[in-house]
Length: 228
Image 1 (cartoon, rainbow, N blue to C red):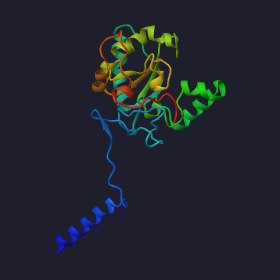
Image 2: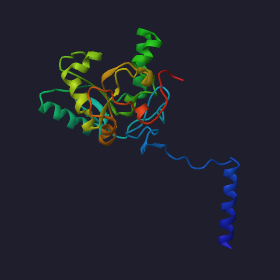
Image 3: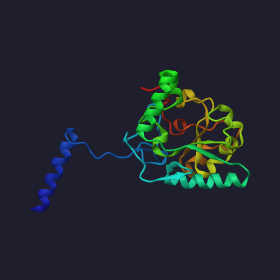
């Protein structure tokens, strides 16, 4: 009798799902073996077409590196990255890491007031669309501020170190040269994104003369030059 009731209930639930009255459980999207949708994923892809989910996301544990907060796992990797650079005479200065939704909103609004919305959208993400909110992005600099937030940063000691050795510690240059039509942002050689060593090394082709694929290209996502 119990078995018959269970079977009847199962049939009824299946009919409800088929009729669209009850949605089946959502499954996390995985591309190339990586979860790219959930804000808490180390490989989450955030761009002008892909808002953080949830938009109010805050990393469960943040660690400060010289006063700059970063996702705990990314912070551990960054410490190793910076120590290795230091051993070769290169001092990496952390500039900006995790920013909350409200902090990003204030930054974006200040850019809009200063440059207008069109240019602001090329320089800073709108709140809810920023990698910095994941705690996985770190802007870095040189002692003394040489070429800070400029394309010439790529030719400074820290810029060269980040491009060559960042993947060994799980970091990629998220917004590479010539990829604005894909990422929506101008070249930012100072903006490092932690994705984990495995993925970073898959993306890095080992040839400094060529440009590595963006996350959008690696995961086969649509270009995101502008907000939808």
